[in-house]
Length: 236
Image 1: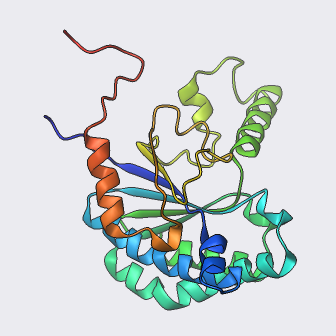
Image 2: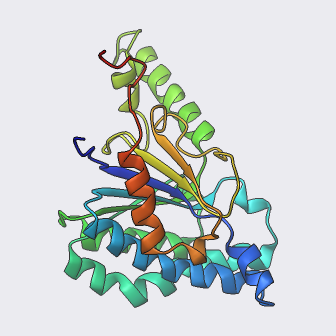
Image 3: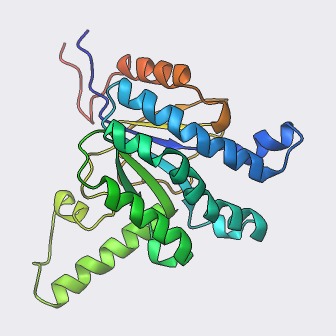
């Protein structure tokens, strides 16, 4: 069987808080361990031939969480990049941050912008982190931007899906091949709804801090056994 290229993997990193509570620790401890796991999985993805790894770090809905938890999550990027950015640069990783970044705290935004600037010329793994991201919001913003261009005479009325993708936050990336969600939850949670139209889905029971390179490899092996027809049929 011909090996299928899995160029773009997206992961919903779920279960940090519940994992910590099971260990008798505060939810923030789970977020810290989950952040450290990003390094392990990014390196594994790169070694397994993945070109784009897109991670759901903070959604537009996560602002509803307790203030102390949100504040801790906003401090995580600095802790994370202070610890791992030099290594990511050496490995050739390119950092891309996706979401409504202007609504983030200034200190958080500064860290994220610095990470993107430092790695902008790298040509290795594209490590995409979604911060203050929601897919319905992304599509709404894209539709508004297109409508504005039509009203201003910059675009003709009536574009195809490829033209519409140019208005999405992920316009520089290929469609998602494989979507993984950790922690046993069986839902998409407003993540990359347009981009996963024909993605293969994998739901694993392990929480994100427990998600290992071995589990990622198994997910990729499962992907190889999927029959991807994109709405067509097999030749018989």
